[in-house]
Image (cartoon, rainbow, N blue to C red; front, side):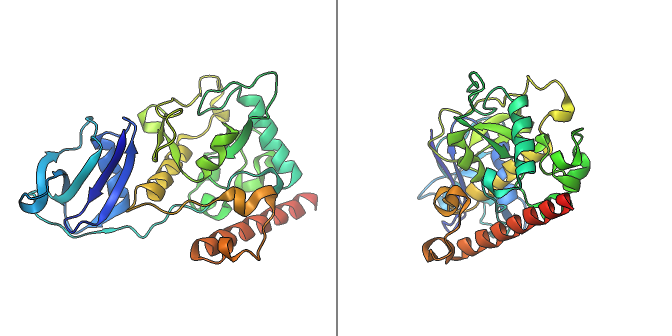
Length: 303
């Protein structure tokens, strides 16, 4: 295990990840395509200091694993190529917090998820005697209704629950968009520290060190017989892409401390160390929009 780092000819970091033996060259190429743009076709080579073009052996997109180390991105003929990082950022979100929603919406998706899932779907830790003290529910796609609707996800939800249980017309609170997690994995899921790749057998892939206990696990889905209650693969694909953008673009985006900023569902707006910077402002705008929407939904449901 160790860091895999990809640089351009000038030494700028283009991408990187912590190798758990789960990301092969084929998948790494796919991830790199998601985070850079270039003026032509490119390939990845071993980095060789002191060699012309710093080019070592070609690393083609196959099922072999990149070894920890530094690599260089060049044209396919081995000459330098101009590349840039995509301006697209990972989607802002916060953990699923019971206090951040109306009681009806919260209790509906929480209780339905607890009924469906007998364990943490990531780690496999079983729920014992209906004791959920060590578990939390988490949305796969964050409760950003605008982006959710623009991507057409409401039409893909086949969950037969009532509209109030689903989160009304957007259906964003369907249990097809919610999973049960071990509590200590909750914020890491929201921070895109790890993700599930549905195109690789629903394997759990962390992007950063410190997640050896879940790396390579397979998402627990066998207990869900009714496909109308099963989490959607498209949502896992979207979450995986956000993890790539968050952790594998350049040197990665900073981590947001949800517990410090939103502990107990409260926001101390006097804290400029939290809300004063650009990242804090973006999270504040997202949080205010999220709470305003929840209030509007509550008013509509009561009227």
